[in-house]
Each structure stands twice: as structure tokens, then as C-alpha cells.
Amino acid sequence: MSTPQALGTAEYDVIVLGAGAVGENVADRAVQGGLTAVIVESELVGGECSYWACMPSKALLRSAQVLRAARRVPGAAQAVTGELDVAAVLARRDAFTNNWSDAGQVAWLESAGISLARGHGRITGPKEVTVTAPDGSVTVLRARHAVAVATGSDAFIPDIEGLRDAHPWTSREATSVKSVPASLAIIGGGVVAAEMATAFTSFGTAVTIVARRGLLDGMEPFAAEMVADALRADGASVLLETETTRVSRTADGFTLELGDGSTVEAEQLLVATGRTPRSSDIGLETIGLTPGAWLDTDDTLLVPGFDWLYAVGDVNHRALLTHQGKYQARAAGDVIAARANHEEVSDAPWGTHVASADHRAVPQVAFTEPEVASVGLTAAAARAAGYDVRAVDYEIGHVAGASVLADGYRGTARMVVDEERQVVLGVTFVGPDVAELLQTATLAVVAEVPLDRLWHAVPAYPTVNEIWLRLLETYGRPVTQREQMAA
Image 1 (cartoon, rainbow, N blue to C red):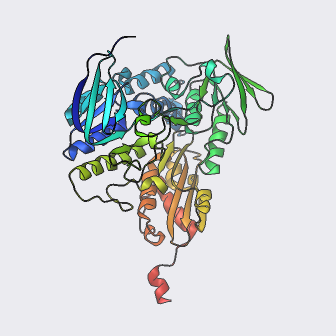
Image 2: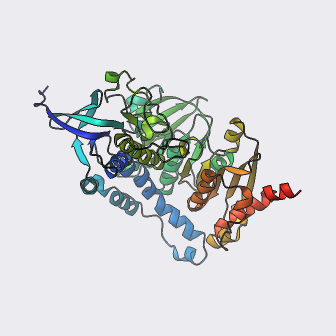
Image 3: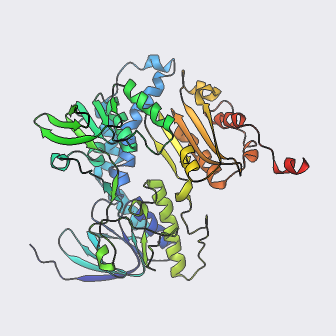
């Protein structure tokens, strides 16, 4: 074992562990607030989303999505004479990841005035991080004001007999694949499982999903049913409420033994059963915290019991989505700067320095076939939270704009209304291209726009946005406060 080189030291206002999108935003906002910042990263600057998650996965999905859209429109359908070019899809994915080079991201850090420390960072004391570089040299970084942990999460491998020894794919291997397997088994039923099943089915791979519970748990049940039906129609096998009891590696691939005694064989195996915090080796034990645990925070992303330690993004388990992590990062970077500069902190709900949306206004898109776009609470979650709820459904295909978009458009929308306050608690859209409807729904939920005011947000005709008018008509026009007073 080589002996580390002599220690160097450096001091900054803020130290950020992790150079993914979340860490970059924390540092950027702190620098914009007049502070100095350094990011510590042992892999690629840009993180999981840029190289192994959001961007490459959507690149893998988009080409087939466009092909399906063209085939739904007469005229365009007749012009489509070939099948999906998988090699071209993979090449486009490689372009999205810059062939796994972070040179562009490093250049951005430099332009933003953010320093970069390459290596593995561990907290070694209050406001202190020790970085071991790839060459073994060691540097001690000290923060004047804050350390922000933005290390993200890793794929969770469940305790299934033989699974770890079989060395299955996680989402990283699936999104960076260089050649497409003839068959793929997927353990899990969440968004990653559903998206990768959609992608690989479009590549011609024989896909089998084995989910211990349902598909897309936590979303509206009709969304899961529509995605499962579409996967089956495309040739995938979708096994729900099915336990995997044992996994073994064979000469031809993998064998999964299921709880009902049956088996599934596949050339490749993807495990997509959730995430675990990337916090096991960042020195939490040196400050009295548990290695490998999620880091709890208040709404300013400050870890309770500390006035200098922040946890931002996946590692705090508030909302494991890149856009929510970046939202948290903006609040965290701003509040770190405000506290350092002795400025007023706006930490009331929906204030400048808090991540209030994490609790009940989180937007999410599953880029499956069909797409699922949702924000806020499902009907079941709203009832469980104690709201007096009415759920209103409408078939998106009945909207004129949808018929223009594609012949035989099939999709469903649900609006969940708080009956007492007459505001929208949640919205779910399922259908082709519904992701582009989501921001309007998010604004309605976040701003708690009363239904009687939403009636005056007129959707352009003929666009799919007319679904809002149809949902409101189905609900029935509410009585305004002025009308109540007049009565």
C-alpha cells in the first residue's frame, strides 16, 4: 500500500461533496452570493444524471417515441418504411454523454468561478473535508461557513439469494449499454424498470418484468394499468405481485426462480428496485452520524444538530428526482450565502430559502409508452392525508387537439380537488406527449389557484391543453365567494 503524499491545505467559504447537477447548483448559487466554493468529485463532473440516468435514458427512449408518433399519423405513417436503427440510437446516446467525457462540465465550473478537487472526499471534522486524489496525494479542505453533501444515491440491490454474486446490471449498465441483449429480465416495477422495459422492447429485446408489488407504485392505478397494457402489447411479459426468490448465473445468462415455482431465463438481468444513499464512506461517523444512512434535513436543507452541514439532492431522501435536487440546491446555496453574509433568511413555507415543494408539489414524468406525467398528490394519498377529495377523470383522446396530434389517441387525465378549499391537489396525465402538459398543472398545484379562477385560463384550440377545460366542465363550475355572499 502506497504512503499518501504530504498534506496540502486550502480554505473556502463552502465545500460541496459531489459534482452532479445538484452539487453544481449549490456551488453556483453560493458563488453568486459572493462566496468562494470548491466541489469535490471522484468520478465525472456532471454526475449520475448526465452520464448514467436522466440524459442517456431519455436518449435511448426518444427515437422509438418519435417513430411511434409518426406511425400514428396517416401520411407520415406511409413514409416510415424501416425499423428502428438501434446502432444509431446508441450513437446518439453517446453524443448526449459526450462519450463520458466531462471536459465541458469542467470548463463550465471554471467559467462560474467554482474550484474543483478531484478525488474521494471524506468529512474529517467540523467544516473539514479530506480529499484523496487518484494519485494518492491528500489535501485538507476547510470551510469557513458550510459543507454541503450532494453525493446522490446508488442502485439498491435487494437481499435475494444469489443476486449479488450474479453481478446483474444496475441502471448504470443499462443506460450505457454497448450492445443490445436478445433477452432482458428486470427485477423491479418503478420508473427505471418501466422506462428501461420500454426502451429495450423497442430495440427488439424480449423483456420480462418481475415486480414484487405493482408497476409504478405511488402513481394513480390507471397509469400503471395503461403502461403495463402497452408493454404487453409490445411483447413484454409483465409479472406483477411476483417474488424473485433466487438468482443464478448460467452459461447463457441468468435464471430467476420465482415465488410461484416458475423460472425466468434471460441473457441479461437488470435490477431496478430503488436507491440507497451514497453516504457510507464520506466520514459521517466522525461527526456523530451514521454511515450509509439518509441525511435528514429541515426545509433549508440544514442537517439538524449542525449549523454548517447541509444535505442536498438524493442523499436526503426528500424527493429522488434531478429537478427536485436542483430546486433544493438553489435554496441551499442561497441560504448558505444569506447566513454567511448575515442577511435575512426567508424560511417560512414557500419562502426563498426553503424547499416547500418537496412535500406535496413534486412533478414527475415516466417516459414510458404511454408517458405518465404527474404532480402533487394522488387521490389515495390525498385521502390518506385527511383531505376531503373529489377525483375527476377525462379521456384525453376526446379532446380535439389530441385527435390532431395522433389518430386513435388514447390517454387519461385525473384532477384531484380539495373540496373544502376548491383547489387542485394533484394532476396525472397518461398518454403520448403529456409531459408537455405538466408545468401548467404544477403551477396550479403550487399556487393553489382556485377552481373558479382556473375557468378563466383559456386553453388554445385545438391543443391538448383543452383537457383543462374538459376537467373543469366535468367537475362543474364552483360557486365563487362573491356568489356565496350574494346568496
